[in-house]
Length: 193
Ligand code: SF4
Image 1 (cartoon, rainbow, N blue to C red):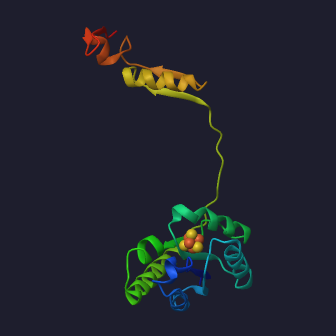
Image 2 (image 1 turned 135 degrees about the vertical axis):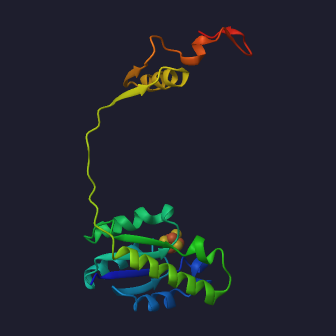
Image 3 (image 1 turned 120 degrees about the vertical axis):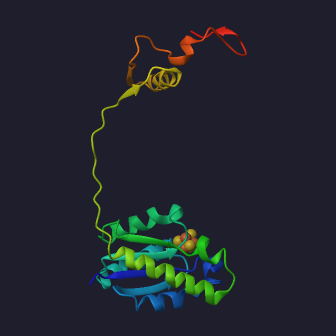
């Protein structure tokens, strides 16, 4: 069985005034695979991250779920904490109980139950996660633009202006696409070619 740690953030009163964070953590302890669960006032703070790192060592955690705010805000913060704890940063799931729960609900019991359900789903997912590895692939800084109409020509020029070599491919004998077939264009009546 996997060993999951669950960390429930109160975000001060942002989450804590609507969601009973200690209750969410206590309930999470009974979810399959969960070896450790706790709540804390500010999970993204240095002491909050240290809590994850220490618990990972003390409880031999393999995966971590943090129930807090949007992943847009702190997914990277917690992935770094995972790495600092010697864990694969992709063995981590974040549950948004702030924007998706405390900010949109007022009934504390129902909000707490929803937070519990979201944590349960994240725990079920994280135990099925496969560890990913970051890989680096060399990139040739050259561009191929297919189609020599106006859009392709402009794209080729824009890339060339950034200092990169561009190869523009056109199946017809001339470039310019439909534009080159027009005589004059509104409103300046310039010769389109
Ligand atoms: S992790 Fe997110 S929800 Fe928790 S204290 Fe930081 S900003 Fe607030």
